[in-house]
Length: 381
Image 1 (cartoon, rainbow, N blue to C red):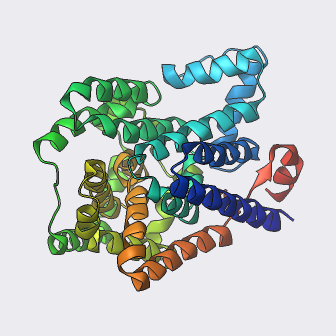
Image 2: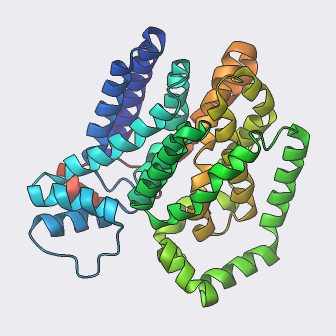
């Protein structure tokens, strides 16, 4: 029952959002896109157990809504304000999760608002790439990332640069790790396009893959994550000390490093994105944010494979790797108009990513339960 329900929920939601995003793109009508995001947020607000950390966030919310205080509440002030306000007013937890889901996706689509034709392709990479599973987990950092993505709109205009840093301050209030992002704007302003030679980028990626697979690298990372040492205070201050070790929460980062089929599908997608990056940037040369997105996304790809066995660095790296699916949407858009065969290949690869996640839905917490199916969820566990 749950397996069939999961397929129905995700496929119907994907088709609905794709249809509305196409209409929004053709008519340049943002209201239709807002409706699509609203429906998505309602469905994901009603989820139960989707995302490794979902139940821990739910427990905290219920604890506060019952009039209790969390004794050691180390969550950041911005996120805590949203959670506590809704809980104390008495809103059902589905409203809280729906609001978070809406803000996340709304900010991402606002980031690409200069090019409405990208909307359907972004829906495709978001859904088929199963980014919704990542967004359903680690709510605080995902909020910080989405705010950071939106803040890129205010980098190019120096008069608006204060808005960028105010948004980074807001991101910091969601997750303290966003502090590392203060250096991004100066670097982007120094040089707009960091990576222009595709062959050199491909070579760097190959070297990163080889080093990341070396036994010595895995041993070093295991030692680092097992012994905080001098990094302890830094990690605690950045909010990452909770990710040391190898609990269930690391699964979303570590499984892809085991050399399975999903690993190679993801690698091929990233290689195609890199290979066509220069052409995609040129195709969107009047939109500087596309180049910014690729700069950050490419760094994320390299770091991902270099430290593929590290859950902690994987979390930190999401501020960069999180841009890959967004640039993937621009790549699909370019290929649709310029290279239909590669477009089909890339769509198939994203489709295989979705199938792979569905195949392991009970292991990776993608299986969709509604909040009224708690007993069924516990039974399947």
